[in-house]
Length: 127
Image (cartoon, rainbow, N blue to C red; front, side):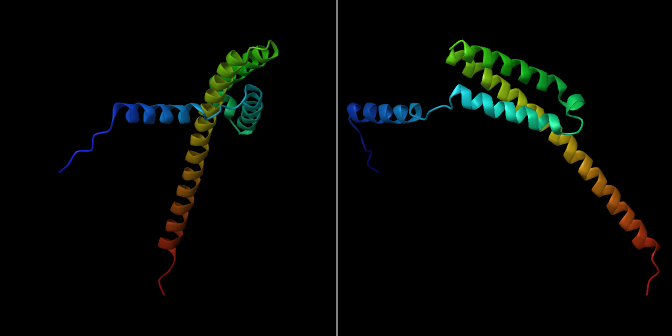
């Protein structure tokens, strides 16, 4: 088996290209992220029981969103981005917690329906 040896310059050049490609992926602007997080929080709040299921996460998301908006108004895009990302994380977590409750409720209803169906099937006379 032969081993392919590359010159150091080729390896370094490849690493630089790889790293620059990763760095070239632009982040969302803080204002766009703030708008998306605002919408996400509103959607999560519309779920029935979100205040009891994910109230702490929603409050944190709203607080971070408020800080992000203040930072953006002051022209501090870096801090606005950081707060918006925290708000997004909290809002996504709140959404996940609420969806777990919704899915559990749906599963329970389906299980109850299945039990009723099985009971009806047992009571039905055989032909």
